[in-house]
Image (cartoon, rainbow, N blue to C red):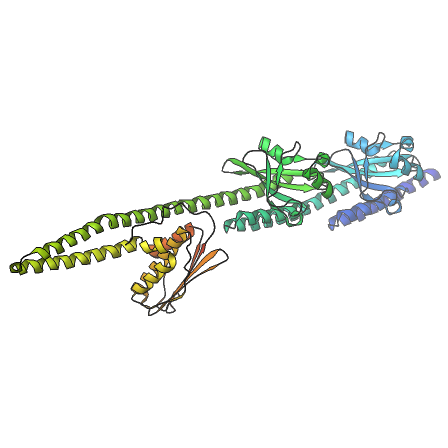
Length: 565
């Protein structure tokens, strides 16, 4: 009876101690303690509860080839350091749990094992260990284990499982919080990139920005945007995260090598990943992987309007999470949108340039036809009339006056035709360039024009034509609508650009979107890569500032040589 009472008292005390330990761990979990704090606390609680002072929490590695220590009782922290990785060995309780998904125990067989596992078992005199699975959201995450110098009680597995349930809850809560944080960060990054895309920022800037965003999100600081060669033999870096821009410089070209994630994407059109085998590859790929310690890479395709354009890639010094491909896919969609928008803008500008070039060619053709056709015929008729007038006898004075009047009217028609021809396409612009053409405009203007700075060197013809017609339209507007008393025109070059400034002191209030004149000028300027800025506050005059590129590809245009006026 005394023995029974003693055993009952011990059992009751053990239950009380166990419930107290469970309550303390549950309190930490309920308060949202950090996972590492909970792992350390539960290891200490379990170690004391079983009287071994040796308890650990381990997580299975992603490859399923071993364990990583994430929680250790304080008295054995030197023997089982946090972060230490052990590969599976025959007889390990944790290896058996990984194989079966159920609690397992092992005996003295590990005392004969080679390496750090056997050394620790022998030094601590461990002859028995038990491990119980930690199941998080239906998946085997790791184990809670205890080690002892004596055989462990038969109910050890059952008692351990009560703690592993709390650990699983703590891990699930932590992963849920981390998932929410990660989702919020990802949405913020996507929003920032989407804003850049919506603003029409240049693709090169978007590629760099999205590389930085993805690198930070994945936690590697190593992300790149690549474009496939037209010949399908390699890749070219078009964007790199700032922290790895030296390793993956924009513009650098790599030939495909077997095992590259980007090569697999090119081959299959789907996301792919590569492992540590690229460390052994010869050439710059292997050199960079070895220098940066890269053992894992994931690449996701960038598909633009149905065609495989390139890929977004991230690189890690450890295995990248399984959801990396899915997360990359959300960014590649934005990158593809930016590329498609840029292609659309390029096509639009090319189309506008073709239309304007065709219009300018039509102007030249009309001016040439007027000069070579109607204008020459009218001049010939005028000469014929003058000849006829000179041959009339004196008694036909009335006929002489009639012919003289017709000749004068014909001369006025020729002058009108010349003026019309100049408005269509001034010959002086083609023959002598923009400076003399602007001086001619200034002399003909009814409003005083101050030509502050005018260049005389020849410029690309599309640039000269655009600058001339912008000036001509601005002068016409100032005369007809602004009622200006003075106009200033300045023409300078700076940093491979032509800067044209036109200011008047008129009524102001010009609407850039109203009427076809200013809209047409904007189209003409933007079609050759320039910009036009209009400031026209009511009562403060109107200011036009035009910037045109002096280098680049311009539409082909016919020869400047035209018949003299």
